[in-house]
Length: 234
Image 1 (cartoon, rainbow, N blue to C red):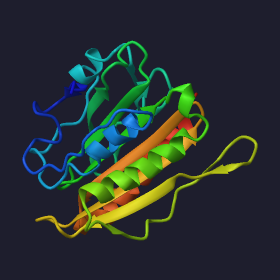
Image 2 (cartoon, rainbow, N blue to C red):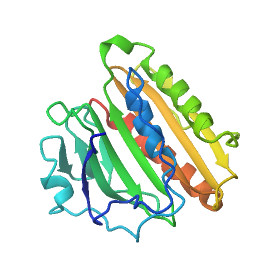
Image 3 (cartoon, rainbow, N blue to C red):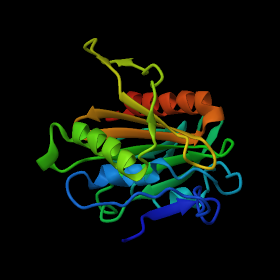
Image 4 (cartoon, one colour):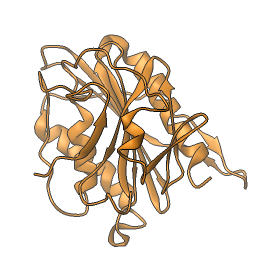
């Protein structure tokens, strides 16, 4: 499996391979969602505290054809989404361009961490036309099934209230949110997956970490989704 192209401030990246829960990435239309879910639960132990992005950071210079520094964050050139410099207590620490999309910038993420032992990732993906217009629903279902296959003891819990944003025509948009706890792990984990359709893009946010910081994860996950929803296409 080809590793994603990652720029990171802390060597091994935010999710150092200590106690990782990695899910297999299958082929097919839901491949991108499985990549998101593969990152969904990487959190039982995380690397040393990460450093925030600065204007001269290699996070930008190594990915300048896909990302650009703007006044209030890092812009994904293709979707126009601006990834904030921080989400609550989580600083922006890495940018990823996934395999096969370096020239198109249609499968990328902005990663945030490390407070304390948790992380938030904002994904922007442009699915193939073959899975539109229900591609984002396919992604959500694939994510749920993959979690349950990998962790039969995973408990589905009530998600936090969804953030919302009104478009110019007055229509209100909100993401779907799934939430799980994982009591079978050495450290009890809490994980959220936000997902919404922004045709032709799909916005996904993954927020995971110890259950004790679930309020922080919820706040940061909502902030990430709102940042993307407000800036996509702008």
